[in-house]
Amino acid sequence: MTYLRAITSKLQASISIGKSVLLFGPRQTGKTTLVTSLTHDLYINLMRARSLKTYEQDAEVLYQEISALYEAKASRPIVIIDEIQKIPSLTDTIQLLIDEKKAQFIITVSSARKIKNLLPGRVIKYTLSPLMVEELQSTEIDLHYILENGTLPEIYSIRYQDAVEEILETYVNLYLEEEVRKESLVRNMGTFSNFLQLACIESGNNLNLSAIGSELGVSHNTIAEYYRILQDCMLVETVAPFTKSNTRKRLVKLNKYIIFDLGVRRLGAKEAYNNSIRNLGFKFEQFIGLELSRLVRIYDSKYKVMYWRSHDGPEIDYVLSSQDTLVPIEVKLTENPTLKDARHLMTFCTEYSVKQAYIVCRCNMPRRINELVTALPWQQLVEVFPSRSDIDA
View 1 (cartoon, rainbow, N blue to C red):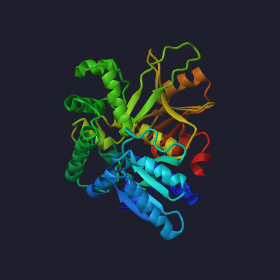
View 2: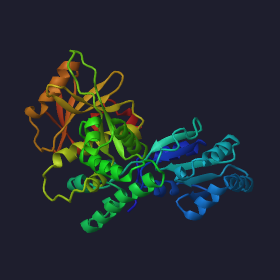
View 3: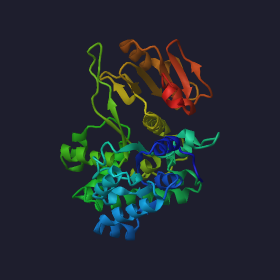
């Protein structure tokens, strides 16, 4: 099944004005399908052994090929290079071709580990995530299926659970093998494998890196480096704490890390498919966090996705934070939210003089809980943004 991706129009707009683009995203999120659907003159896939060997041995070949294509067209060709992280040094040749106005590039990246300073100032950068709710093209979205199996395009189109389990298990092992072992990112793969399972289990929790290090028998710094690897491979979304207090309240200052796809998280944690609603509340909370992060990123919003937690108990699942706006959001699996579900939101609103807060839940339509709190169906999550001009544009 082909999905209309929300980022497509932005890519097309950048290309139409002559810009080169760099598309980040984990494996199997649909980068190749998306970029090859765009108008292009040459497609180079560095996952193919022959292409990898050719350009790895001599980057000048790329320069010669594209120069010839430029002369034949008498204009700049559009060139797709898939999985550029396989040959990071190739970016020097790409940069030269861009500077000489001989080509326009669409480049995909599955791991930013070795290319953090890729083509500064010469490309427009975007990120492709697993499918967002608005991309699912269905009025009957199976929430339970998403919470258990995630939204990788290949997975979402399957309803045969044995096949889903096999694909997800392969995916988890693929990352260990290709993104970690082959790039020699860690010395002890056994320890990292144990860490990855623990990171999946702890997805969405406040993390004490020292405690995790003690459990695995490694240092705090090693755990921090492992999480940087997950970030560079785009396997986690980071939710930072909101730590400003108007009343000197002691606030938690630990990051949360949410595994980028709930199906990958489940298989990485070695959890079986759950046919009941047990533990779905916490998975639902992570799902909303992922959706918020993607909405912010895909639409170039000014907001950051954060959370707020006081040492004495009150906690807000997510806070949309900008320079002049705070939007507190509680996530509840319930279909019938009550004023009791809004008590921490009211604490936050009082602390920071906030006039609008939300409970994102499974209610059928928006409803007012009180003068400050609105309950919102999760399908309408975009409504939490104070100004939707960025999103509606």
